[in-house]
Structure formats: structure tokens, C-alpha cells
Image (cartoon, rainbow, N blue to C red):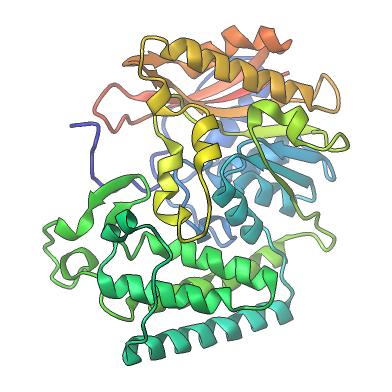
Amino acid sequence: MTHDDTRRRTPLTHVGGAITTKGDADAAALLAEALDNVTEVDHDELTHGFHTYAARMHPGIARSLVANFSSTDETILDPFVGSGTVAIEAMIAGNRPVGVDLNPIALRIASVKTELRREGGRERFVNIANEIAERSETRVRSRVDARAPIPRDETQYWSGHTLKELAGLLEEIRAIDDDQDRRAFEMVFSSIVVKVSRQRSDTSKHDASRDPSPDPTSQSSRGIRKGLPTEFFLRKALELVERWEVLSEFAPERAHRPLFYEGDARRLPRVLPPRVRADLIITSPPYGGTYDYVDHHARRYAWLKIDPRHFERNEVGARRRLKGADGLRTWDREVADLLGSMAAVRTHDRVPIIMLMGDGEVGNRRVPADEQVNRLAPRAKLRLIASASQERPDFRGGDPRREHLLLLG
């Protein structure tokens, strides 16, 4: 199998299996419990599954870690907040979530997913969604012209009529007066823009429209018909409202809304205000050399008027930068900087840091994450207290990798 495998890979499905532990027995048992608190099918009724996000932490792991390592009203920091998995679980547990990410799209998704909307706000959102869908359908029937606000080289990923329909939807969204509603609808739009493209998924640029399909009614074999993007948009908007309602039911009466900051996880003392310090850190850094994470949202940047160049220049663990002979040294430096940064923003020296990390693949060399962190932790005046590990498939056809929950203090 080549590295550019085009099989569909859904997140969070490759879980389970034997768990090995090391270090402090009690702490390792709690880490193992978190890994074991994951099922093949996660019945997520909260907002976790609203928007695709590659390589996100499983909600069951985050839920277990928050329950076992924190007390109510503590500040829980996730320096790679991604789509907000840890923030959501911390919020409904009555804690104070803080999230940092270098990717602006991540912060926008996480902000929408952690909204606690009252019933009136949800009803208004439904009404606006129906109005946008109705106007979009009228645009499609009347063949109203709309120009997609994206570079010419990006247009290849959508058919002509789909581009026009998406552009019309975005025009309707941008006309919304309320900032909060407009931002939320932009993320609804973001959630469908790859689904109606020719690109197979966020993590593959493969043209799915060329795939042979045994089902003549399938999306890939017949293409995206007119009106389908609008149907998807309305469906996702209504789904978001349903998920918001459940989130509101689970959240405490006086839940703490998360604080989100855009910045580099290796520079946390500069990114976070001095008053914001962590009582617990739970995070899942990129798996070294596995992805160029900036590419996962490539189809979204132009539509959302986001410039990804700062993210691209400073991305941690990027495959493109870890290929050469100096790759391992670069990855070690990035991990060491991250450890030092997290250690510096704790409320005190005993605050635990919990990292979910997979083995790296740097210059065709497997880098066991637990061994790497154990080797680098002393530079940040940290030590690896305990670990729990499970095997994960390597989709490139190599030996299975391991994924580790690592507790440092």
C-alpha cells in the first residue's frame, strides 16, 4: 500500500485492544481506564461530532481524564485544542476550560461547539437556517449568478453549479446582522464544503468523483446535484441546534465558557494572559511526521477568508519538515519546547500534564513517543510518572504504531 492510500479513514474508529502500563501503578491504572473508556461506536449526542476534524481526541478519553484528574472549578488547559473535545468535557464537568491553537479554523469550530444557547437563541437559529435554505433554493431555481470568493486554482474541486450554490449560501450567511449567528453559520458552511467537493475527505485530495461505485445512486458516481449543498447545509444547521440543546442540558447551570487563544503551544507564556494558569493540562499534540495538518482544511481557508501562512510556518510535527536527515533533531526540539512551555504555565509544580501521543514517523524511522518524552522531560524539569499504551494500525502498511497516554509532573 502506498503512502497516498485513498481508502476512507473515519476518525475514532480504530480503538480497543490490550493496554500496557508503566510507572506509578495507581496513575497508570487511571490512564488505562481512560483508554478503555472508548467504544468502537461512540454515541455522541453532544457537539463533538458536528464538524469533522482529523486526528481529534476521542471524547471518551477526554471525559475520563477530566473526571479522574480534576476537581470542579479548576482551570483545564488544552494547548492543541483542535475542535474543542477537551474544552467541551471540561465545561460540562464544571471546570474552566482554556484552549490554544495555531489554526484559526480550529478556534472557530471550538467556539461554536461550546456555545450554550438558550431556547430562544436556538429557535432563532432554526428560523434563520430555514430562511437561508429557502432563499438558496430560489437562487438555484432562478439561476441567480454568484461568484465564489476563492482563487481560480481552488475552483477545480467543485463543479460549476456547486460553486455557484455555495457562493450563494455564503452571501446569505454574510448578510446576517448578528455576529454570533453569522460565525456559527459560517462553521455550518465549513462543515459541508468538503462534503460537496470532488475531494474524498479532509485528509485526501483524491478525486472521489472518479471512483467506480456499485451503487448508481451514490454521491461519488452521480456527482453533486443542484440543491444538494443547500439540503446538506440545512441538515447540518438543524443538527447543530439539536446538539446545542443536549449540551445545554449536560452543562451546569453556571457553566464556565471556555477561553480560546490563537497561538503557538510552544510559546504559552506569551500567548496566555498572566492571570490564566492551568490546574491541569490535557492535550493531544500532533503525531510527528504523520500529517501536514495545515492541509486538512485547505479547501476551507479561502471561503472563510483565512490566511493559513502563519499556521503553516509554525506547525508542530509537520511531515514536510521532518523528512530529512535532521528530522529527528527537529522533532526533539519541538517536543522539548512544548514540554517547557506547558510546564511554565501551571499554577504550581505539581500540576499534572497529560498528553495523548502516537509514535512518530520521522525520516522513515519510528519514534516511540513514550521513550521520546521520557528522554526530553528532564529538560523542562518534568518527569514521566506513568503511561498507558495501545497499538494502532499504520495505514501505510507498516508495523502497528502505539498510542500513549503520558502523565508528567
